[in-house]
Amino acid sequence: MRRSRTGRSAAAGLLLLATLFCRPAAACTLWAAQGPAVSGGETLVAKNRDWTPDGEQYLKRVRPATGYAFLGLCSRNGGSPGLKAGVNEAGLVVVSAAASCLPSKIRRRERRTPHLLLTGLLLHCATVSEALAGRSRWQGPQFLLLA
Image 1: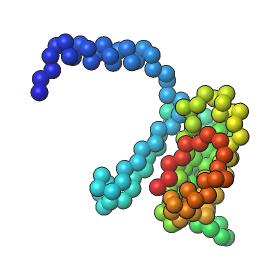
Image 2 (image 1 turned 180 degrees about the vertical axis):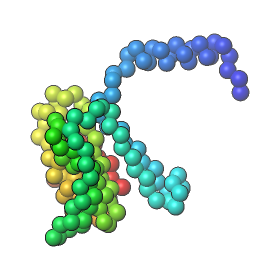
Image 3 (image 1 turned 90 degrees about the vertical axis):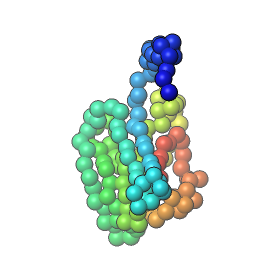
């Protein structure tokens, strides 16, 4: 189907207008695909960071005396240290992002479960259902992807 010149001009005008009034991204972006959208019917999870990390990024293997072992993506020596994402030996994936849809003054004011939430989920949960069963203990604005 062919677009008219007027249609193309209107679309270009809307795009220009949108770029003039959009706010810059200041959070992570999370993606997931599952089932027939993924080869083998598994789950595919991805995360990017929409800012320049100010700390060192590293992978950490955790082999606890009790609980599930996991591999985590961590940050240190920056403004927001801690575990950012991980996958445990049972196959549970936990990925966090900033709850930047809320203004930072509101996020700072709200009491929030610390980064240890991710560690706890990876250590003690094998499935998304198990992780969600304990969500009454989670506090404050959070953006988590569980798979």
